[in-house]
Image (cartoon, rainbow, N blue to C red; front, top):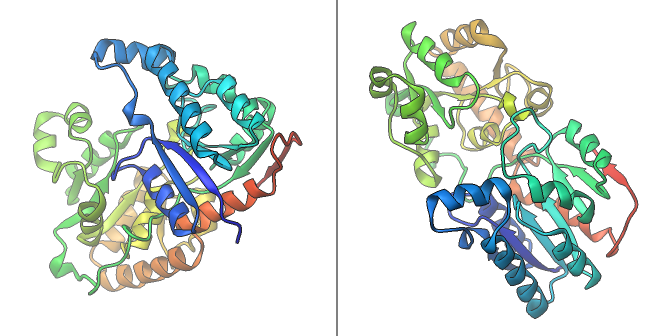
Length: 356
């Protein structure tokens, strides 16, 4: 295996999935030089909001200067930008002129219906990267139409050092979470979960407290919300302690699948995921996971499986095996990207895509 030096620009913290991909690159034997984008941004909250929306200002300029200075000193083979929105096109052009291959890994959907702010600079850089990594078939076509040179479809993945099964399998005696959702308030999730609770289902919600407090009436928040925002061992423990782990698609992001599904399965949790071609391609329905389409089927699946611990254990174990043997881990996905990058010569301009 070819080992390379990678300048890894990303929001890096123990709670970010970008850190999981960095760890996978290190495990693969590559030299990884971190460049933490969290170090940049205006201190004033109001100015920071303006800076974010415009992707412009002194901190944006400082970040690009520092990135080039670090690249000049370290002489990397690859620049990997993981969810980075503040790169100048000229910065990428300079690096490519130095013979550095440039990669953009973007989980969010720049082309999707949500239309979040902050994409101004990113839109200008699409044609300047050597390779774009995206998780949606539609985005492969979108990137090529926007001038991207090369695009590879990947999938979100679980981190094997964080998302793993309990050393001794849990039973319902140890589970204190019934119908569990751990995540964000996107789309119709608050209304759906409140309605389920009103129908007597044992719903438990965890996630960002600020967002859920605003999404739920005070009485429902007090009744349903528990444990705060969960990461790492607390997140893993909550999956172990849940009878049913819900996984919703983010429709406002036009997702085909979500990383939560792979994390739940890898932890050995019973996965009840929103039905989609992406989920159906990766788990056998009724054998490795349970699926639902729409509210009525969601409730029907919960009522079917909640009292059936034996079925849940069987499906969870099969889903766990599929996650760990099917390439749904960060190591496999990162290796696919690096293999693709190393096929590219610097300043390679053939327009092509890999869909897998």
